[in-house]
Length: 88
Image (cartoon, rainbow, N blue to C red):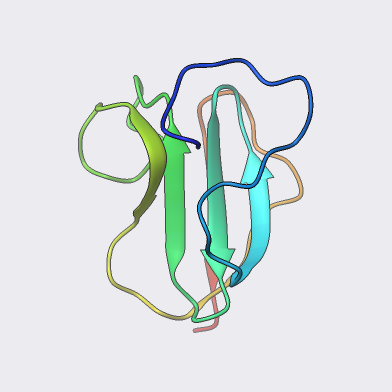
């Protein structure tokens, strides 16, 4: 998520955003929600698991769709599958 391929041994802040509300990680990818209800994803995408309708790898967060009512992320994600729940 820091726009590099450098392996990190300890946490580093990604960008300057302070409005992340939840995060979940799969095998080589991450999804997260912000306090405004938007859903974001980044990482490897060779199975289309980032929800971008492509298989492009993203090294920093990209918004998934335009919905603003994402409420919950799963506590764990399986290999190449991600999911999130809206309030509706």
